[in-house]
Image (cartoon, rainbow, N blue to C red; front, side, top):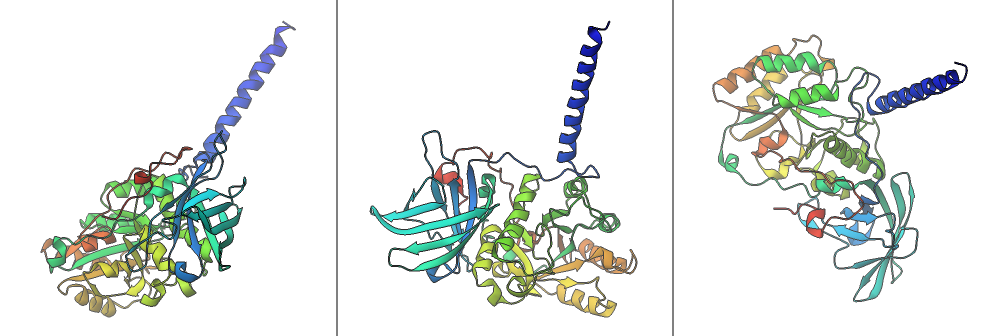
Length: 416
């Protein structure tokens, strides 16, 4: 017995160790409340990059690329430029027409050649997933460069298709969207109030806050999405500050890649109202920048603050504004907005911050008006803002996160 007892203890210790490891894996896969977190894929050798070159002919654009960060067994690296979209909707690719060659063994220096001659060099350092550096021409011109790295599956997001002309463009029936921002726990009762009236809504979710204290969980968002509610990106952290260049890219593209990773693909981005300065998109001019180009590249609709009470036209999909009916707006003001929303060809977003309602039933009377108008065919009610313009985003299968670059015709989705 004395000889076998240590073996029994060793076996028991091994079992306990395995159980502890299993529990640790479970804890990493789920939040404190058991809510699934954003899936974390193994770090790939090939990443999708979003760059911005500040200056010269590149300043109003974003530059996209697939880059092999780690060399193959034969020491090979690769830089493949992808197209993006300018703020005005035109296709652009600032790196097209050049041959990109690794300039050293670090993977942080690329030489761009034309007809065998070096024309410019891109050099940068990387901290975390953010790159800072410069683009230098042989003539001596030099421009600062900022870049953000994502899993290669993020390339499936480019380029967001343009909203096509559709039968709705000639349909004068006004269209209404009810939007709930921030995926708050108070949305639960409100979503049920909508469902009880046969209405749908769009839920704008800050992806890294979902499942946190006082928030909806991913399971709940999946539940409501299966019941025809829309779920769209609303940044990652909803940071109440003016974001810097890299932070802005990470909040926009990162939020959309998070949605893709959880299996809730969207090409709709809702601007946080807490953003300030150049990323508080309350005028058309603020969208006529590289930041507007980023929104145009990755989103069919960017719900911001620039265009309110619009008629149905695709140009207003970038900067589409809303009427907030929960933050102290009087019933008379809401009725006035409702009258405007019923005009022919009107496109209107009614935003509700459910946690700011004085009582859960505060706007029930307004929901009744919408339900009645819908039942009589006076208005059309939709669940996502791209449907305001007569189109709904089609699902796209994400990349597998592997170590090989996809063929060029699969690296990005071409604009139809």
